Length: 597
Image (cartoon, rainbow, N blue to C red; front, side, top):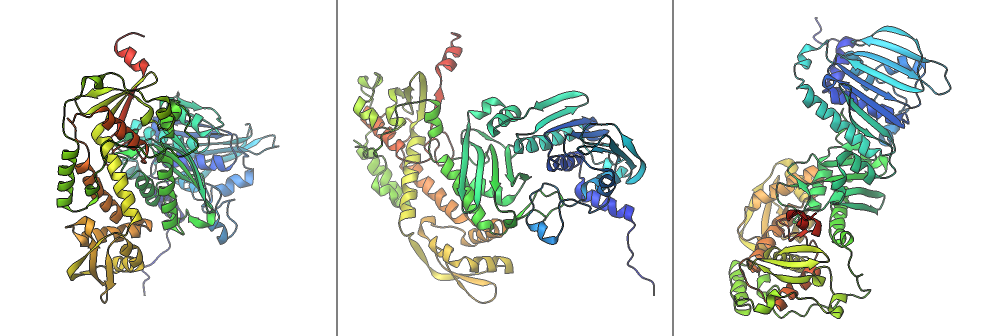
């Protein structure tokens, strides 16, 4: 009987492997640079021609390879970094599969030169489409030089999928930038068509390398972060909410020195910015997560961009908590503009002449919000500002000593009954009174929600919802957590669950849709913030309705009360929707406006 199964030739196997590892010229650069770094290189030069289509040359001063090692390096699955299957779960190197060089060689004309330490000469191998054409000695300094030319010359169908040279080089520059950020102690030089694109010398700190690659002005808007907990350490830099991008291109995340694009990590990062960043905007972040190698599996994808955590829920909670902890203070504001030191004892609660958030506004129901607004209007009638309002109002020395940043500002006036004009040293500070009051109310409501027992609303008839097998299993595993958030669920046979209560705060919602979103997040990241996020959106709406509106005249005592209350809450630099609370104009900026510099 004729067999339908046959063993593929080695040449086809190599091309299949190349298809997994070598997606485009930037893939070649990534694999070769990782080998250079694993070899202990202190200087790496990357020379690109025609976007990598014509030539990719990587030269390093690493430990180099002997003649025998050069030949073995071109064999599939030949590596110096693994000796047993246990090593796969405690990886400390960037490369380990032994697929890169043979895969690259199978789709290019490859020249491999290397000279180990204490050797008088190097050795060279030239191959074409994976077939060795020449081998011999060569003179060179210690290190390795690899040239891959005419990429995909023998797979024209793959070559047709390459984009314009500028596009391909953009991907290459991105790869080099990421590895250079992760290794500031290494000198990276990138050239394209004979022109030096950047020359990043060895640096002693991440900040210096960020200044070299991403721009020194960006450093002013980055917050240093270094937090450890139970074997996990997160360090690096994240941007203030005011500094953001329209996409995720400025997010650089690394695990044990390896750049990754992991949905758990990115979800946790964005969760840390929840309620302080506008929807559709993304932070700038250069973050390094260090953890025991056995707690993360990097061998789940040929390009090694995706990882799998042993305890992804714990990692997610640690990352999002660390980001929020870093964003919580406004130390960046006060460090950039020094003021009197904070007192060692806690400042007394501000004595307000008008309530910042009416007690009735805490009521989550619609009619409660309306009552809060009405009563608020009666307590704070709209009146014209007195003439004395426009003369600078400065706190007394005793008041300034017990005030935070906002309480210490010198009040100049109110612009269009919507913005507070203040002075901080030589700088002009503009504050959106509605955004400020909205943040105050939101933080107070959120604290009361977290401190108290969330009120539930029982359904007249339990809703029986049928999920798929995965959703059902995930929800059943997290019944206790869902109950804490107000969703009481009971198994109802098979894949069905009976929903008995919902959070009263959410009112009329599509419970089934929300629970399916929760299950999706549990599957993706091992933790869900969908319910809390939905509740926070409602709290933000309540806070918005109860906040001081624009076009509202305020008296000096009311403004002082507002500023003092702003000092008492977290994330005071933006409203719950991510809009900025304040903007600062330096004296230099103002003088340039009037051409006085």
